[in-house]
Length: 285
Image 1 (cartoon, rainbow, N blue to C red):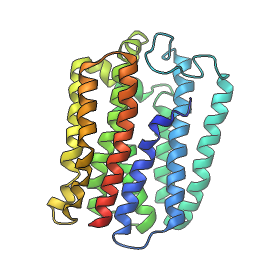
Image 2 (image 1 turned 90 degrees about the horizontal axis):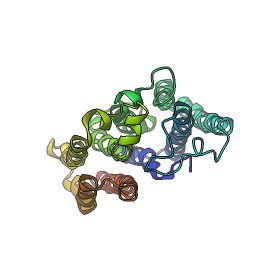
Image 3 (image 1 turned 30 degrees about the vertical axis):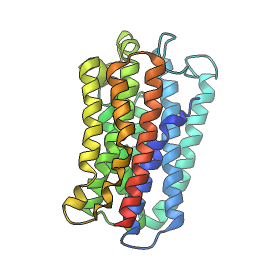
């Protein structure tokens, strides 16, 4: 429960996209791909555990929240146990990171350290940025730009502009997952002083933001094709558009916990499906 498996597509998807792009210009380094995948997943798990622990300490996961019960706030697991699990998850990420540093250099150390730090400071530390409305920005940066370009870098040790371009739709979808989460928890977050972007913007404007992010995802994915770098196979993610439309309707019209919990899981599924299609399109280009 504390690992929040519904959010894990946000960790897997960018690795698939970055690696697919790398394979178009050279052979696949299988161990580097697997290490990047394991590292990304355990950074996400460690972040989720850290947030569970930190939110409970700040009183943000009260009984009136519409989302699933959090294990620390709900008294299901002792706080110290959650903290130990957080350390162990990040330790696994560090271990695979050591291998990636050996094969791709010290740039990977900087990326990994920044990712772990961003995960901890989302709800931890003296001034958590997740409480100031900056969560979506950091998710876009770390689960989009950093994760896609980093996955390419461990394969090729360089960074073409296409890696940054393809990271944009991936990051938008990852941030959209957080938008749904924050729309669902808007009222309970406001009561405890957690000023997420949804709290700052209000429900209606946040709903429009979600719609704009999903629209931007489909508009930005074909940019390398339009620039003449890759082929029209980059349009393959359009096959996932019907799911995106259903999610926009749900988030735009529903405020109840079950519907928004379903939209949260659906946005995670959309990201994974979109990125699988995008990866296939890249490989076919």
